[in-house]
Image (cartoon, rainbow, N blue to C red; front, side):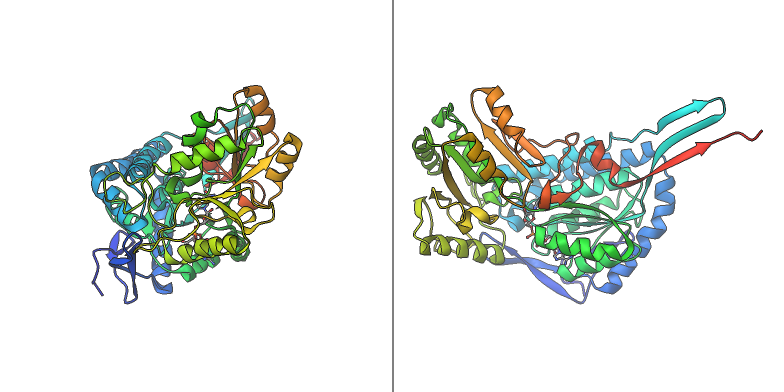
Length: 472
Ligand code: NAD
């Protein structure tokens, strides 16, 4: 049934489905258009196509694969403005955030295309040699969430292809459009079957994770789903990269200038309307500067415009979907019922769209839901501390370990604290610095494995040791 400009991409072809779903603009709650829901039959076709394409693709010279992956970035760039508008419309983010994501997608394609894993010579003695090399896995399944739909897809597609794998990727059913379009454009560069994009519901993700011909799953999403992915992947002992949730702490030391860091602290917490795995979700502030930081944060927050990302000047959009809106609204209701003190916000807005106002909660108890849970929405608890030992213990008292930040003028002190935080990334006086050559991954239940850098690239390979010995 062809009732939408968006199609699945299978074996280089546009494919439609009898089953469709509506993509909703979260700023208006109005439908954008329908998109196809892939069935098990579509998945079988896509995996078969990827298996067939793997033979030639994995045998293609690395340099040729790199040129094609870089060209994927060119395709996005040639359509940059349209991608930005589509991303704002389907995800809800503001213009600057959309520019960052689309620009990042272009950049990642180009930079990952420069990466390669060299063979390692372990020893050589005459004709005898031991070498360790990296071979592709086969068909890689990518599964992405709705907060950075295109960038996180590129984080999987680019290294998987450079490493010589073929890909079947499933975007979130909440934000499939940019990824479906990208998959279609990519067919002008890639051989058929190398990159297949299937939009579908959660069940499609589960079928992928159980599929015996998919050799690896690279998954970004919640920790709860990550556990299910790990369970299903046991069927054929799939390789796994899991980028999961976080409850990232930020620790503000007593020597800061509150006014000078308020803006950075704000964006550390509220960028992408806090739908950011590495958003600061617990802000620990030393008691000497607590009131100053609280005041400056409130003052800065009042200058930031929330609304439809297509309108000029809007920096924060709505939550991406009704499910998340209800979840965050429930957290606010719980916080109100618990009698917590709001420095700002606290009540969902009365207007169309899934808008939740920037909410700052004043020193709630450490076991309050707004402290313990990953809100994944613009609700930030400010927590007072006196003693560094105490704050390090509180920051680490979580089963998450994705990222953290420490803020202080005395860099040596700040770094001492940073090195004691149990998280995959710890920023000092900055946040959200990512690059294709910087390893990113979670500790504890925030993930398994790494994305980006040569460590990330190597996760799309098997290591193979070849030992050669001459016959006498
Ligand atoms: P989610 O886990 O609900 O969904 C993610 C993807 O998994 C979607 O495509 C979904 O359809 C699919 N899925 C759902 N059930 C599945 C199953 N049983 N098997 C396989 N796939 C299944 O997550 P979300 O709500 O889309 O995203 C928000 C979460 O993602 C947050 O917890 C956030 O912290 C996390 N996240 C982590 C990172 C990171 O890099 N660590 C980045 C972005 C988001």
